Length: 354
Image 1 (spheres, rainbow, N blue to C red):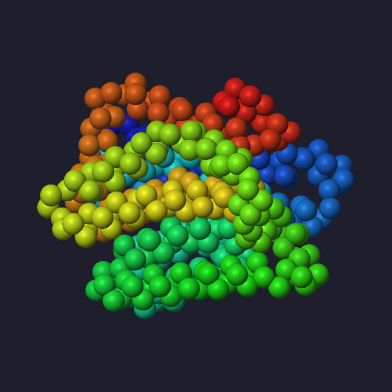
Image 2: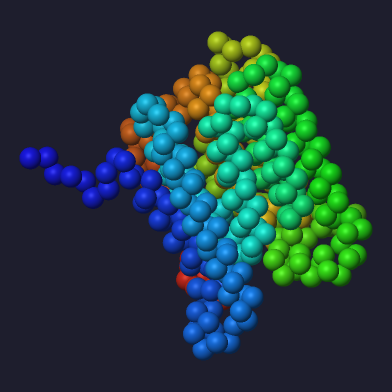
C-alpha cells in the first residue's frame, strides 16, 4: 500500500504559509516584549495593535501561499520556484511591525489576487483605483512599491484591449498620486491626523520627502538601505534579470512586447530604488522581492511564452546544479534577521548574516 505523505497535495499550501507566519511572529512587538505583556507593563492599545498585525500577517501568509500553490495549474515545477522565493524572502514578513504597514500589504495581495482571478475587468479597475488610493494614503512610500506591483499585475492580467489596460493603469496611478500627495500635504498639520498616523503607522507612514536629495546627501547615504537589500537578495535579482533578458531576446514576440515585458519585470526594482531615496524605515524596501515576483507570476499565469521559457530554464538549472540552487536560497534566507535590529527576538542572527 502506498504511504500517504504528511501533507497532501491538496494541503500543500500549509507549510509555506506556516513558515512565513512564524517568521513574522518572531519580530512582532508582542512576541519581542512577551515579558512586558505577561506582567501587564504594555499598553492595551499596543497589545491590540500587535494582535492586529499578527492577524494581518496570518491572512497574508495564507492567501499568498494559496495564490502561489493553486493558480499556476499544470506548469510542472514552476510553482515550486515561486514558493521557494516567497518563503526565503528576507523582507516581506519580517519588516512589518505596525497596523498600517500590515494593512497595506494585505490590500496589495488582495488586489493582486483579484486582478489575476477575476475576469470582470470593470470590477478589477474599480478595485485597482480604490486599493491604490487606500495604500498610498495610509503609507505614501508604498505608492512606489506596492502600488507599482498592483498596477502592473492588473494591467498584465487584463485580457481586454490596450485601451482597457491603459484606463486601468492610468486611473490607478492617478489615484495613488492624488492620495499620496494628500496624505503628505497640509493634512499632516492636523493634530488628530498625525496622532492616528503616528499610532498606527509609525515611521513607515511618514510623508513623502525629498529632504535627502535637497540637502545633497551622498549617493551612498541615500541608497544605503537599498544597497544592503540588493546584496541580500542578489540571487533573486539575478533570476529577475535573466527573465528580463530572456524576454528581450525572444524572437517570437514583437519588439514592443519584448520591451514591455522586460520593463514590467525591472520597474518594481526601480520603484524600490526611488522609494529608498525619498522614504525612511523599511517600508520602502518591503516589496523588493514581492513586487517583481508578483509581476513575473502574473506574466506566467497570463501565458507569456518568454517568461514561462525562462522559468523552465531556471528550474532545469536548479535540477542540474542543486548545490548552486541551495546556496542561492540559503544566501537569501540567511539575511532574514539582518533587517531586524539586535534587540528583537533572535535578532543576534543579524551579526552572522550581515
